[in-house]
Image 1: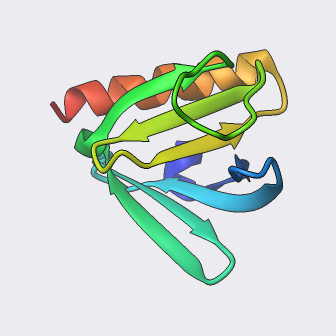
Image 2: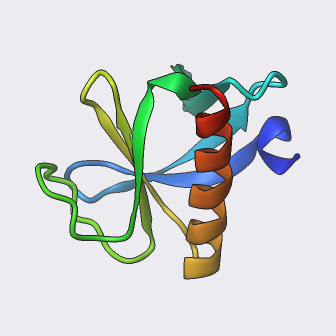
Length: 104
């Protein structure tokens, strides 16, 4: 419910800087929307190929730590969120993975 209403989250840039964004799930639970400033990016959940929790992800330059959750997209883009604690990270990953699996 919180994600459908919109949730403030931290998105991690490749250079390690953190920006606040608003993340929203569509009412149909098929699109993940990320808004940073005046820019919005819509991501179809079926286009999320993998969700990685924590560090140790090969092939991306973003400095990851144990509080990170990284979405790997079909377009080969990666989007990393940095959570406030491990429970928050695990809940986000588990819920988003469940919604993604429903779209495949």
